Length: 164
Image 1: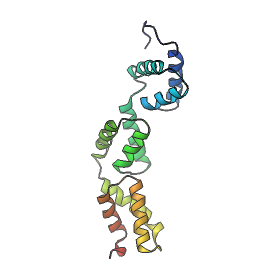
Image 2 (image 1 turned 180 degrees about the vertical axis):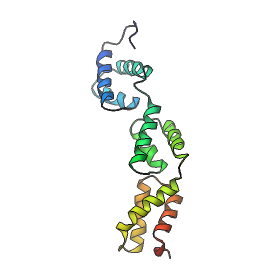
Image 3 (image 1 turned 90 degrees about the horizontal axis):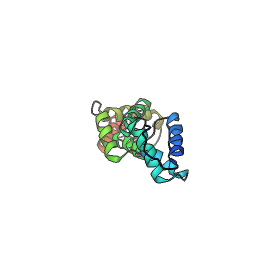
Image 4 (image 1 turned 180 degrees about the horizontal axis):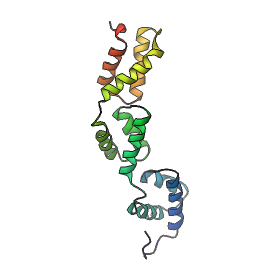
């Protein structure tokens, strides 16, 4: 990380600020760039500092995405769209997010997760008018990123007495 080339005058400040952010938790390069630029650090200094940190392995968007998806799935089961949305909101490239999520979900069946989530939520919906219960359960699962087919299957299985 410490080669003999001349660095931008704000390089040390940018690198130090990035390290402080990384000490709290892993971050994407895009997130770090945004935060450092908000401190009015020069774009060239920020790019230089982050490139050095990336070469040293401290900034790794792919590893960040893998770790983040694992953590999200441990918290609660979610569909692909919710996972991709979270990663892109946190600065991951969309193509990277889609690839990492596809890999993470390849060993799992999101339709089963949708059914599990629907079952856990269904008790709260008992006593509501049937159409309201179905609409709320659909919205709940949609916000967790499940696809329409997965949602409809789960809603039909969990609230069968509401089928017409």
